[in-house]
Length: 599
Image 1 (cartoon, rainbow, N blue to C red):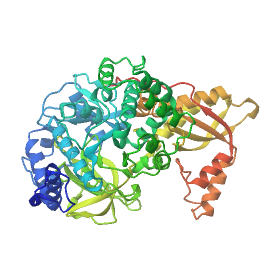
Image 2 (image 1 turned 90 degrees about the horizontal axis):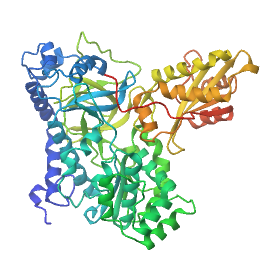
Image 3 (image 1 turned 45 degrees about the horizontal axis):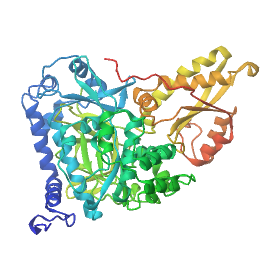
Image 4 (image 1 turned 45 degrees about the vertical axis):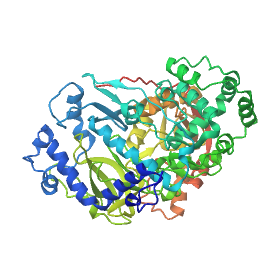
């Protein structure tokens, strides 16, 4: 299709007229960033002026920045929790939002061991859909011809629960995949999936993965890109292929779907595309039978141009294994979003993972920033609202903590993300995601902080008391060399009676006790999603942590200020720890988890 030059974009030549309009929208938003932000805040405050929360701070209908910043405090989830609890219990008055709360989005962050509940309104779905609609127009600037094939994406829904009032509580992507915006999306030749909707919308993770992989194999020559939301999801999909290729090949050979797939919707939609193909079955067997998985993605899907997965933040640990599976295909991180708000997109998606920056789209919410300097932390108090920085005030090279105000009713809410400004697109800052504040361990969607890990160690060590044994030191790391990845905890023990120390069985029980103490996101990943493997405790020799301190001091650490790191990733330190391991222990069963949550 010829593209009208009048709406071509400074970002590059659009692939079609629809793309040209999307790119023009990006330019308009980023050119007038501060003005858009001012208008967004005005809209939010005008919309929610009558809410209990805003009236509490005596805005008296004001919608300007100065009044808002001077009167409304910066808050955390714990500050909001009483309001959220009332909504969950059925209070329909305009507490946070003048629009009815349509559902709760469950965050991967937790409070008191449970997923955080983020209120949302129906109009937010259209706002998220708008951001999604910008992704392919940008990608088409860098990878031509994506309308000539399909995307093999492993997408899944997760279990949902209901609050006492009947409102659904579920992850943001589950909400999106089950929405009419996704299920009845218009045909777009640039965004065709190999997976029918029914395979994505099956809550049984095995049936969903099996059927999506089967469809991907059937369409292998049409696949132009492979992806999942997180890098860990794509790694898990390849592991699934390693474990199930024989059954998948049999289905392809016979044209009959495995009897383990009982979901009626999946059976109906897959039956329309699954036909006997002995040649394809033979190919799958030849590629998989010898156990060589290097380059498996490009061997089975030879036309794949890139991997579409998030490999920033904690997901960067999966880059080496994805390079191994894909023969170093480019890895694109297309957007930056959370349960609280969708923030922006990557305008240069084909750069190296270490160079990924996200451009904030100022129409998505009102954004403020706390300067982040660990040596000079900013004190935040409910009593005296701090004057935070706006998008237009930020400086290249500096780090900031993100604070958001949304149409759904979050006001000056600390998301916890630490971002570094790397540059600007027009007047919109471009950020590198540094980390989620206070997160220590993360394998998949889980986020475990230091306090939670400490509590888990303390609970598990209760089992050692009968043996007059204590944990004198510990550290941890997320092992992603195994698939799925798992937590590894190093313990150094003090045994008052070495001849009557804890048995292997008791130390295995300690692993399970730690898992039972971790949050519901971790336990769901272990039990329902199978995206995290059993927790491992490695017992190290007495004196190992003294050696660790000596090593740190030899590298310049102060003996007066040295603290044992509760998470390690530096190779020499891990090699030292592993060289001192005397026994290894795993959880023998999965921890307790249910989709029902406490209210």
